[in-house]
Amino acid sequence: MNSYSSPHQLSFFSKLKYLPLLSTGTFLRTYYHTCKIIRQLQSSSSDKIKQYQVKRLQEILHHANQHVPYYQKIFSEKNIKPSSIQKISDITKIPLLTKQLIRKNLSTLKATNFPSNAFQLRSTGGTTGNPLHFYLEKAHWLGIHYAYNSIYMQQAGYHWNDKVVSITGINSIKMYHPFFRTLELSSFHTTSKYLNQYISDINRFKPKFITSFPSALLLLTKYQLNQGRDLQINLQGIFCHGELIDSVQKKFLEDTYHCPVFDQYGHREQCVFATTCKDSSYYHVYPSYGLVEILDKDHQPVLKQNRKGEIIATSFTNSIFPFIRYKTEDLAEISNEACYCGSSYPLMKKIIGRTQEFIITANNEKIPLTGLYHIIAEQADIIKECQLFQDTPGKLIVNFVKDENTSEKSIIKMKQSFNKKLGSTIHINFRAVKEIQRTKYGKFQYLIQKIPMNDN
Image (tube, rainbow, N blue to C red; front, side):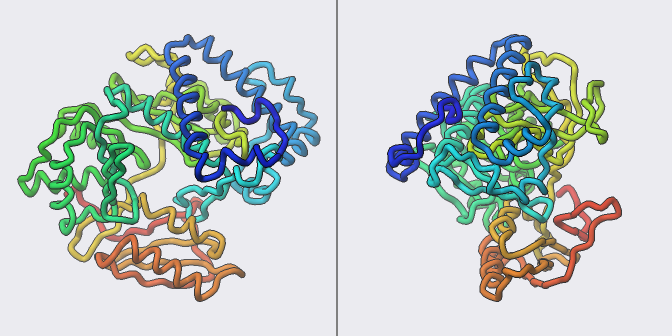
């Protein structure tokens, strides 16, 4: 399934696997192939894993040198030959890839040996207020996503036929996916108006697993305990993603549901996939997904235990738009210890960032912000920046900076998107501003929340 392994002519037949009727086959082939690769490395030694990563790194570099104009130019200017990368530490010869560089070189980062209908435009969640656009290989990326998540969940006994409740930022209040046996609930409706219904829905559905933004599941759990209602289910595992979950919250969920709680760190860019296991809270970095470096502010490797640095990632899954030494802008602490589970995967002790943020309704109820980020991403072509501000329960101010493409029609569209997500729970006031101020450290803050938070 590695498209870069054998260059193909851009004929009519090369486009077929991306057509709607055939893309399911592409998805399934990618899924099973990826699962096979993951399982092969699960019991491998550290040396075997390093050998695998060096080989994959060489493959993606050769592909980039042959088919990606941006890297052809960079490698030529820097006199970098992919064949000179013989060990992992040699990767430092390659310049870092920043979000600013991606925005400036979006078209030249696209691989030329893929048909036009293979490219699917995606974007980051926009937690910095300025979303990043990039491309993934249509259908292929989804197969990869499901493969890694399936293998990750299998450590808790998950089987493809098991029922799962997913609490994320979907548009509808709830949706059911019979093929995946998954009931999706909206994280934007975790208020008392809907939580009673959610509890009833979950009790009827009787899932074995829950996957959720931590903030949304915590709101639901605390509500049902305060109301004296029980989730009458026998969970085998809880899988958190999208935000960080601290040790106190993790223990609270484990004590309430009497099952292990796992956490996941990943990117829409498909550069890093790391998960905790049942034996520790350390993040196991999947070596087949990509190569991870932790660099200090001087771009030197962080080697000592408990020292933090920026996560720099090279994707092994995205050949259509290669991310090589990508600055994620997330921080992590490394660990040189071995996990009790026996895995030889590289470990990160702690991920720093991705905090849980909330908007407060007029009834002083919390709405998790995480699933809202992509609304700004959808409008990124007509808005420079956007920042949310709240100092009064039930009222939200959306400050946005126009660019030359911003029209009244596009502003109306943005308003409709926000109102569709938040419904009647929040009154939203939209304000066009000339600029959005940074913090004293020069960073963009997506939400300015002036309302004191409590633990209820």
